[in-house]
Image (tube, rainbow, N blue to C red; front, side):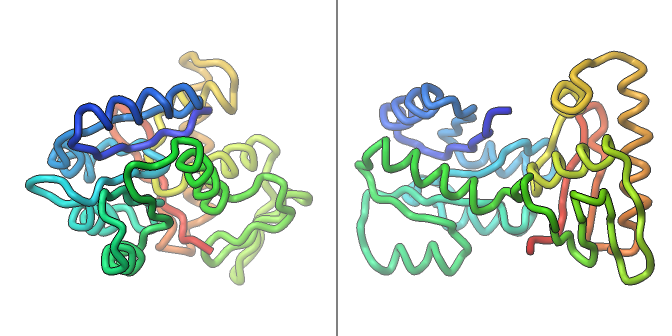
Length: 228
C-alpha cells in the first residue's frame, strides 16, 4: 500500500521534479499547482495520508490552506515548504499544527527521510499489543476491544480491518483498497462482507461519538478516530 501524498506547489519546475522524485521513492503523489483544487475536495474524496504545502502560493498561501485542511481533517500530517528560512515562518507553521518544516531548495533525500518520519509518527504500529482508540482500547493479542461500558471479542478479520482503518486514520479509503489488502480479492460477495464488517465496527464503537466511519457514496469510507 503506497503512501498517498498531497503536494501543493505552484512552481511548475520544482513541483514536477519533486513529484517525480517522490514517485521514484514509491510514494503516490497528487500534485496541485492551484490550492483551490484542494479546498474543493476537503468535504468529499480526500484519500491522502499527509500533505506537503508550499508556504508562498498565490490566491491561498500554505498557512491558510493548512488551516482549511485541519478544520476538516483534524490532525492531518503536514510538512511546509518555503523559500524563506525565517524563524517567524517556522513558528507560524508549528502553531498551525505542522509536523515538520523544510526550506527550499531542499535535499530530496532529507525530504524523504522527514516524510517517512512523519508517517511513522502518525501511523499506529501494527505490532502494538495494546492500542488506545478514543474511549476504547484494543488488545491485539487477545482480539479484545474494551470500553468502560463493556468488552467485545473481535474475529481475526474484524481486527485486521480495524487495524487497517487505524493505519489510514483521517483519510478516505476506497472499497477496492480495503478488499484488495484485507480480503485479497474483489467481487460482489466480498463487497457485501465488507459492508457487514463495517456495520459491526460501527456498532462496537457506538459509545464514542468522536469515532466516525462514514460512507462515501460510490467511493468508500472516510475514517476519523481520535488521536492518542
